[in-house]
Image 1 (cartoon, rainbow, N blue to C red):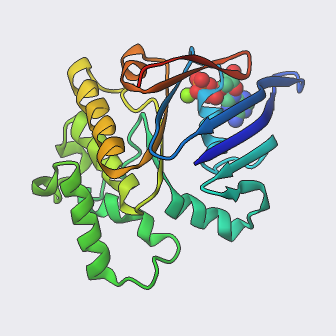
Image 2: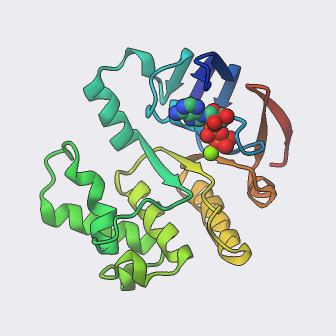
Length: 230
Ligand code: ADP
Ligand code: MG
């Protein structure tokens, strides 16, 4: 599903000198795999995820996702890729406060085409995504009326809405307590197992990596195997 080779990425530091964050990172993720990328804060996990999801196109190296080389894509193809092939889940949920859960899930449909589907079909698909995360009864609630775990489930439903093959998660349990975080992780494991989704989770939290079949550590800009537990 993912083949990344020789990823290099630097940011200018305060003095305008390049600060190397990725320095030849290689990554292979098979279809249907749940992979955790671990490492301390600041080691480059979000940077890596943004490259894999086509959110950042300034890097050296090659990235292929679902058989497509990202570098070759036009802006339009890249936004389709972000909308259709990948789903994103972030630590801070990134829900819009004035919108209901259902509207938040449907948000991606306001950007770009959705294969000619009309409003009712899109709404039905959004309701189905909410049902998958167990929140069909709360589709009319706004984020402020939901618990942290429920907000993250809405964000997961939004990621599932576009029926992506790959889900990229950046510290998905970072704002959740122990028990709620564990529920979200269990849900990820179930999604990958039952729906053959592929998932990459970047995190500094041990509890997430314990659930992953494959754990990679981001160290000095490179990815090294941390061992595997199938
Ligand atoms: P992590 O997600 O592992 O905490 P990040 O990928 O966010 O790490 O950041 C890695 C390093 O790159 C950090 O030192 C951070 O300060 C720096 N960095 C991240 N984004 C930017 C940016 N847009 N401009 C400059 N430096 C950045
Ligand atoms: Mg980060």
